[in-house]
Image 1: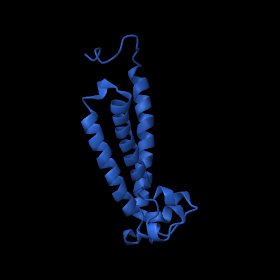
Image 2: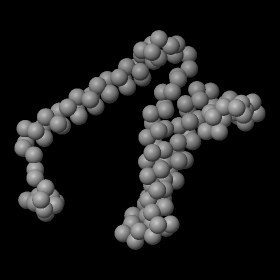
Image 3: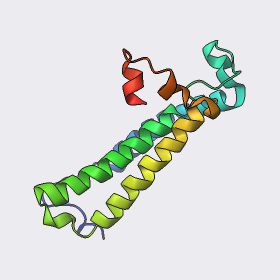
Image 4: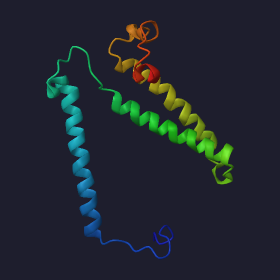
Amino acid sequence: MDSALIPDGVKRCPLWQFLLFIGAVGAVLLWGVYAMLLCWLKGLNQTNMNDYYGFALWIWADLGVIALGGGAFFTGFLRYVVGKDKLKNIINYAVLIGFICYSSALLILAIDIGQPLRGWFIFWHANVHSMLTEVA
């Protein structure tokens, strides 16, 4: 039934081996979800910090969104600069996804500041010797 999806010369693993691998991946994912829920429900108590302001709670989402947007714009680079014509069917969606991802990364960074009303401090009180100023 799915033999058309498997390339010639590729051998399938037995079902028990596949389920063992999926079980290991699932256990790691469940452990991560548990840790995420601990941070969200109990705050930064888990890291021995106070939770007056959240610290880096949204960094994981920001990094994931930026990685997805970077992949979308790299697809655009491959299509238009390198000239890969096989990507012509997905390039419009890829550029749109990249734009949405980078726009939402800006929103996530505003949330991660903890005090978005002080976001202008980075421009007025910039530490020109810090790499964080360049990133911001």
